[in-house]
Image 1 (tube, one colour):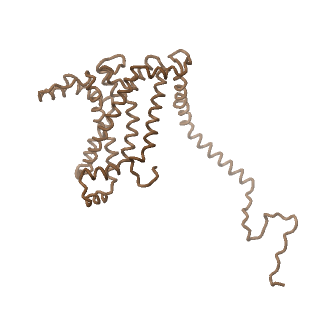
Image 2: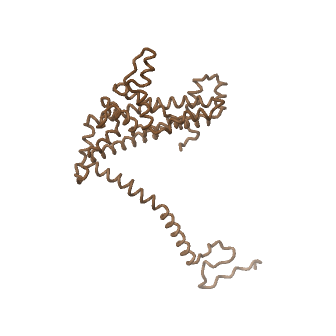
Image 3: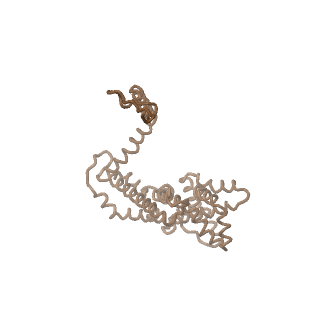
Length: 338
């Protein structure tokens, strides 16, 4: 005898899951409760799908179907009212031998390479000035932002009136004894004039950069001053690194917008010569999107669809390259970028 009674064995045939109070077995859920839970989950999913069905139908009909259709048409000769005829890669081969398309690509690249730095630089200067303002901040911000809410076509028409030959700015040049450039009749001045017009509406960029500047801790500038840093050193080593994520966002979204430039270039070129979209003067304002519209107007749907997919590929490659190289010039507080 050891003083402890042995535990009696369980009766033969008893369920192994039915044990004493000290057991940790999970209680069995009745089958009816499981079926009710499944029915409730199914009902919730159906309710969600029903509420999302207008968007899903709209996406399938008005977005996905046109995308897939244009991809198919890019391999065909397709015109309005006639069936598509398969030609394989002929449209894509023709793209790189078309002089007008190369001109349109060059004009669009010019606006991206020269226009984006000018816009970002002036917007950053305006944001830096507003950060230092002590009074009337709200008024100044409103004044800078108002041009960005003016429709692009309206601002284009306004600047065409101001810059045209014999317009108000031509008279201003005359007051100083200088001859005003023929902005929209001279191929050398047409694209700089277009960049000037698009730079006028930079309120959106200014507000984004202003938010980035306000978020920079003042202690960083104080530490830089203790190290003897001047204005340029503080801007280079403190301001630029701290707002680099904001600049990255602006450059990425801005490049996508510039590659689709159309409205103001259309207004200026139409003002020079009505009729066919040739991007006058001398094709200097013919952008990629404008040439694509002209091809659709001419009924060359297959070729225009191929242009759309080439632009998609260009945009995709630029985006991927920027995302892949962001760690080299975008400052982040953590090692992982999000």
